[in-house]
Amino acid sequence: MAKKFKFIFPLLAFILMLGASTGYASSEENKNSKKYDMEIVDVKTEKYTTKDGEIVTKKDYYNKQGEVIKSETEKAITPTASGDSITTLAAPHWVANTIVGKEWQFGWPQLRVYGTGSSKSYTSSSKTTYRAIDRIGVNTTLYYNNAVEDTATQTKSNAAVASATAWQQSTNCCWQYKGQTTHTFQEAGYQSWYPVTTDYSS
Image 1 (cartoon, rainbow, N blue to C red):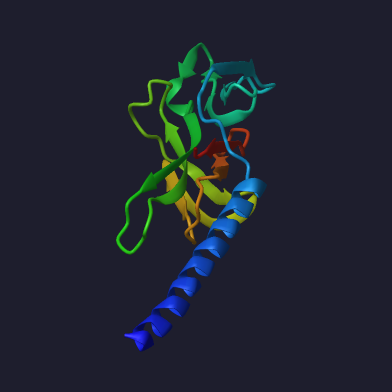
Image 2: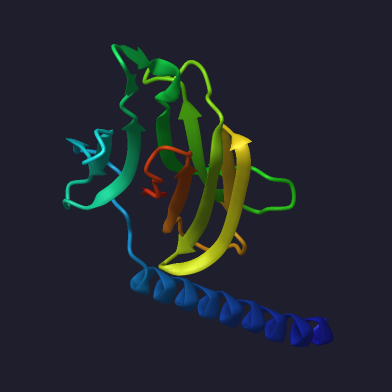
């Protein structure tokens, strides 16, 4: 019996020390990390017309601290005039956004965070029919506490949709993630567009 106690006491001491060190590391990480307030309290929409006659609509979503926690943007191309008629088929409507989410994946001990950026080209602002353009793409980066966690890109020619997802690479105690995407829209006869969109996790 005495031998059992001699074995158990050192084991218990080791477990307690391990728990204390893990808790300390976790508290230090929380101390240095920024907690994003994800409650949307205000949405500001900016709409303007470029020198080429293209209508850009940008939405920024704000929390109580006045921080932008999500942004999305759209660009409506003005139809080109041909004599007395208007060629509506030559007027694409471009949409860019980034979404940060979480999902269960096999082998992960927690919900895995991802950031997906997408660029889409439509025939009109109704966004019911896709319209292929010369070049469309995304370059998405997922950040954890301002450090790059993962990147993903996709570029297509003669296509209407491009999408790429960057994934969480390591487990951690918090959800301090930001997804940011640089989008590419290129079509002959129109001004190329490279908007940047963001989203945050809570």
